Amino acid sequence: MKFFIDTANLQDIRETQDLGILDGVTTNPSLMAKEGITGDENVRAHYKAICDSVDDNVSAEVISTDFNEMVLEGESLAKIDDKIVVKIPMIKDGVKAIKHLSNQGIRVNCTLIFTAGQALLAAKAGASYVSPFIGRLDDISTDGVALIQQIVHIYNNYEFTTEVLAASIRHTMHLIQCAEVGADVVTCPAKVIMGLLNHPLTDKGLAQFLADHNKARETAAPVLS
Ligand code: G3P
Image 1 (tube, rainbow, N blue to C red):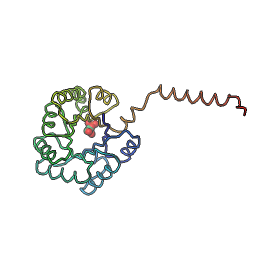
Image 2: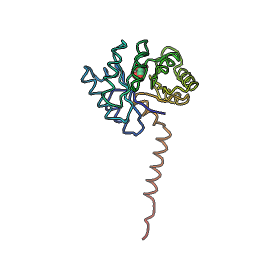
Image 3: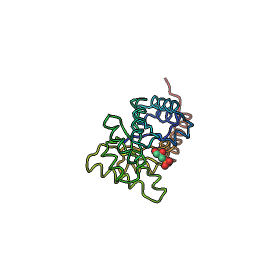
Image 4: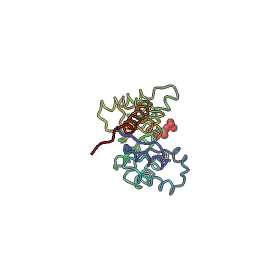
């Protein structure tokens, strides 16, 4: 299972990379705007900085919604670095653009997936990844994790190589549930990845181990030579 971080924040990306478990980064126009990154040159430089901070798999999203423009923008993004995966929205022109870019060997992540039918179309067009947004489905009282399970099942039926990238993950249980149903990738904020570290019994157990060790050291008889 791959772990991606869902942010354009370089500090969060580098801190998570430093943990040694990071497989990639996903960004979107909202996350880039949150970091105050605007203007073509700044955006490209920021993507390059992200690519230089991780081993592979940096999703960079197109802004265009027209087929020809999406293809040009996707080709241009892909030239920034070999680690770039072009993110294309699930719209009619997007499906055509996925096919076109994938045929050129450019990896594509099809984003804004909310149904199994959309995921099937993206796989048939040759997307490397599909991104179902599970948190946003949960927000409207729909089971986001069930969609991941359904897409994994369909892809397995036909041996599609498209990877299921569970996105819009809000908390650690979302991540665990995605792992249980076989998502290939999860992308989440740093706090969700770091949240996996925590358990009060781990903290309590470690405190006890260290206290016992220190007590034994203080009371131990000196070793005679
Ligand atoms: O990867 C998609 C993600 O950024 C959307 O997350 O929390 O805005 O639904 P959220």
